[in-house]
Length: 181
Image (cartoon, rainbow, N blue to C red; front, side):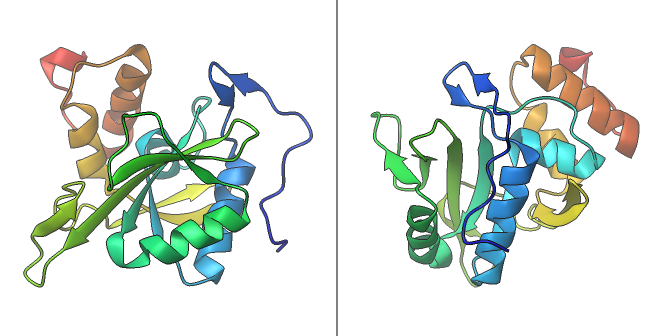
């Protein structure tokens, strides 16, 4: 594999930049894995990974990252041309990296203590990062289906969230709450 994920020949633009395509996601995932940095796919790409197919375009990539790997992750992402965007909405544990070409990675840092309790950052419930999915035929670690469904139904939905919830329900048999029907 090359040192950086391949940029597709035709790139479509999202409202705030370039769409995050499957080839870039897989390239980044494998690049980091080859260097010993584990990430878990979250958000819309997680839904698609769990479904095993891309269902919509994605303006960004959401990743969960263990705090112990954050420094090495940042170094490797810098090598891929990604830097931290400072816009006032970021925190030490939730921030956006951008590559200057318009692609965005939304980073969600977490840490568990010895007993499995969240000790820092994004409060991923223990056991929620046990999902396995496929993007472009490549296996990826991601949020477990039942947790992704719970996360997607915990807030007032936008149209894309409704589609995600219904697709997860259809594949995994989850009961759709009235707020998302």
